[in-house]
Length: 280
Image 1: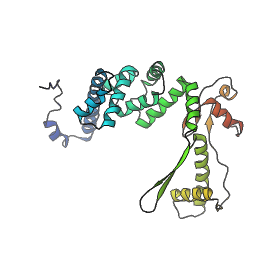
Image 2: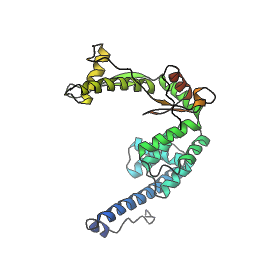
Image 3: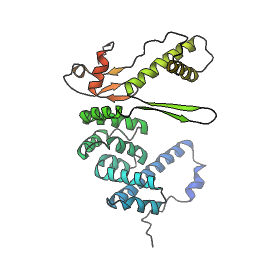
Image 4: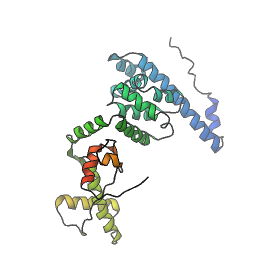
């Protein structure tokens, strides 16, 4: 006989009352239900972590919870990370303040770190993630990882460059997606140039939408077709402190719209750039 462990769920009459609640009470109930769900999810992940490190655990979880193999493996991996490497994030889940999806963003971004480094990042972001959405959590953790492990961040950026590629994916109705995986500073420069030409065309009375204009300008540039206007100089914005710029320290810099980049890359960009001082 399977014990129910006290997880009896809400009073069935609650569902009948929902429609009659005022708006504030509905929002309050929504937040309360989310907090309860997060806490129960933490129990589930704690059990997965307690099942041990055997490869068979994911199969047991998949069988018991009717998960697919990939989903079960992801959940077990998250459970182990939270239990062993990210105690503060796990505590936020147990309090009901954090859901598994946002917790997974902390685990994903710290996966490249040692256990000690992961715990340091975890401690630094612990009080800042509960009120953020998943995208914001990922960006915050990514910046913190770059500060905690600047040398590793620089090495990983260099390694990723060797994976750059262009792919063609055929779609329906005569369309296709052209996908370019490029270093962030190059991709940002390309997009800025395309966007500025498109906006200049748009200001001259074009009836095409900005999305259509960007697509057409990009196509013209790739195919060597002359643009209707002279392409402006593209700009990307990199924020770095003076000591990093001069090479006296190696704090990660910030590429606008992207996030942290290694200090050496920021210095390379700055070497051929117009410098604008920003004093804070």
